[in-house]
Length: 143
Image (cartoon, rainbow, N blue to C red; front, side, top):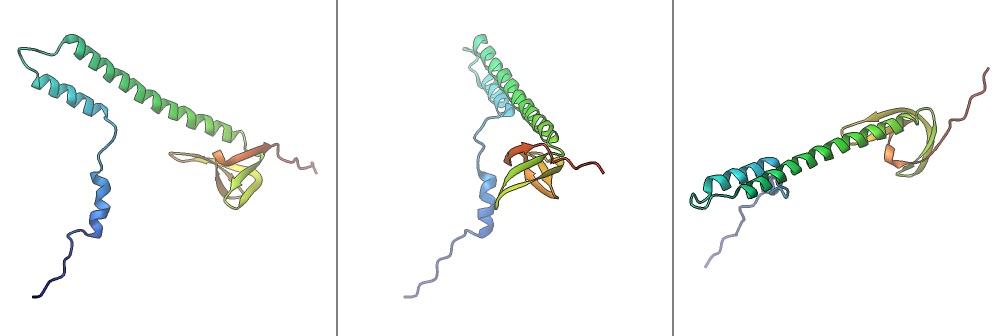
């Protein structure tokens, strides 16, 4: 009696696609509206949904929307505050915690991307959050 090798149908590309199938853990505004729409469409005509329940759900929706807007605006405020603080370090001597120990130098410029603010020292970019001390830059005597 001979046997044949067993091979699975699972391939490496299937592993890459598993992240696309992971469900979201948070309900969004669209999900909330869909739930209310389904509730209204599927309600018993002899026992319609009470006005107070519908109003409570709409209040929850409004609160969710306001909370999302507030979180977004707070993110903008944090980024603006960090950029302003980093700009105040221009020309000052700072110490940053680097991968290989502390680095000290004068801040040449400030930059930012979508998620973080950076200070530049001698052409190297360091996260604003890694600054451990700030001093006035050493003054150069006038000639």
